[in-house]
Amino acid sequence: MALALELDQVSRSYGAVVAVDSVSLDVEGGEFVTLLGPSGSGKTTTLRLIGGFERPNGGAISIAGRRVDHLPPYKRNTATIFQSGALFPHKTVAENIAYGLRMHAMNPSLIRERVGEALGIVQMGGFEERYPSQLSGGQKQRVALARSLALRPSLLLFDEPLSALDLSLRLQLRADIKRLHDELQFTAIYVTHDQSEAMAMSSRVAIMNCGRIEQVAPPQQIYNEPANEFVYSFIGESCCLPVRIDDGAARDQQGRPVDIRLAEPPSSGAWRLYLRPSRIRIGNEAHGCANTARGRVRFTEFLGDFNRYHLVAGGLEFFCDRAGERQYQIGEEVEAGWDTGDMKVFAA
Image (cartoon, rainbow, N blue to C red; front, side, top):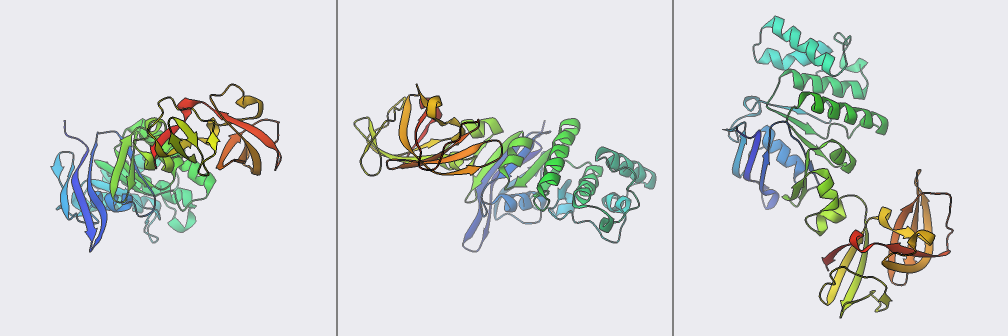
């Protein structure tokens, strides 16, 4: 059975600027794959290449086993949901959803059936005669999604569809899209700069940087088993502890000993140790940890369900997230600790 999408060494340049650099990606039918990366990483350009809004300088793009990189968007059997929704303001909800179906010269009775079915899927029944100006931002995106689903494309392309919405709407629509994918099993390529969206919705996440894919894996693997330092430092929050290893002993940048034990001590030289702030314990919780550092609270942040404590321990600066009634004050001396297995080590 053919793959839903194949990118084979796809590249796109604008003069001397390389936006997409020899990207290869295989997507199975029913997968929800998110392209995630910092601004300028090439994720949006990659989506536009898949949709036919850009032409590659090299490589091949195949959808459902058919090479399409030479075809215009309307011949690729894809549907794109844009950040703005891109609804026709002078057409009703029903007319917006029916537009693509009419362009395919579909039978009018089948169009009505598809429109009603799509509105039911996105829970917008009863809105057929409303105009976009009469809808909220979230409702407009539901209509845009219904319009795409009505076409029953081989591939749904999402171009940061939730980024213009406020937080509550974003979370609601994120859950709706996830629910619909679980129910309908459509194949999707989703572009976002929001890590929580990518982690919550995706079958797999493709981390992009400087036009290349650094790692493609399920969200849990991306978070817990990063392929390299870029992926680890980009995904989630982390503390970076720069140290120097001499004869198996760690020292900070000022040359002071640091009580850090590595399961497999690296060779002598400069290294960067990374920790998730949720894995660092302080106070009584730090007792018995394999790695410890004694320092002072520099400042704190209240983040709702937990407090973030920024600590200075000799030449090391890091932060930890802890919940509970015990409150640590600025200037208070505390012990921090963590397990050896919670560290990731990369050469500086």
